[in-house]
Image (cartoon, rainbow, N blue to C red; front, side):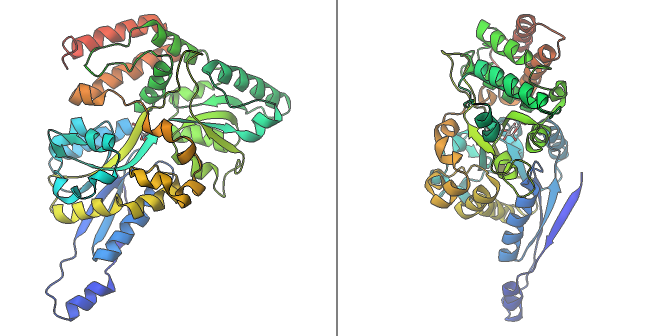
Length: 426
Ligand code: GLC
């Protein structure tokens, strides 16, 4: 674990107050764990620096692994030790049920502002009546495409996965023939980790194949639509998708797309501001749409992701840590992050803010995609979620890598989820 960029700032106002005899100043040092995918660490640094300056404290940043799965393992280690070394944890939307016992109830700090956040986010973060984390940003899977290449080859953004497969193949082959041997049709996240659960849930839900486990806890994954969805994805490997995707997380997919070597990419909104950034090979050439439907009767399904901020129960500075969390999740800070980093606000009114919409037009155009995104079954499976998801991504990964057939693999998965949940009781 690396510690980056300590923020050392004593505000002159505080110094002034001390000199005027306002009592002793005990500036505290807080530690926050931040994501480091894309520009996350940079935004965490500038946000916490502003708070440090305002309050006369210090904040250390603890950077975490890019894979959500590895990050959870690290947090579980830290929290099980009960050490107060990290005051604020950035936690995934699927973790409140698993980690709730380690976090402070933020209700007293947040009671006046919870109404400004999406109700579903607040509900997701409320465990046994306690608000264990404040929503920071939402994620939903979207489709990135090369506007210029689609135009050049007379194609439109795809409506169904079949359209995507055909368009990707046609453009990939034509571009290769014209000299770009590196060109691929479609890149996404296929490593055996939580990101694959998100991608595969999107395929399955888009074919009306359910959400692995339904709201009541019933295991629904072994059905013909789910089998068709996973088979379709397996068919992409080596035809429109490089085999290397089986080891891609978000950043590997973005690397290929942003260097100009893919027609389509599935990713989260953060990739927008980087793809449009000064160092991008494809600046100005990128479009964003909802993900394709699973056939004419299917629907477009985006997995719901996102990150929250929680205060550790073992922190020695709980009040200050809660103040930092409230600052970072405030409308001002969420607006700054939306405009400059394309992080989806959890505050509804920011989706009507003209400056936000100008910087990230698809926040407006795809508003419904964000508000109707499909949650993973983390609430109903509670602390079993990670294990259940692990079984799911492994079952899908086996099919993608040609080691198993979709019907057999999902059939087996159903059996192991039944055992894990004692027949769906979880
Ligand atoms: C994004 C999402 C998160 C998800 C992860 C999977 O970070 O916000 O919810 O678990 O991707 O890779």
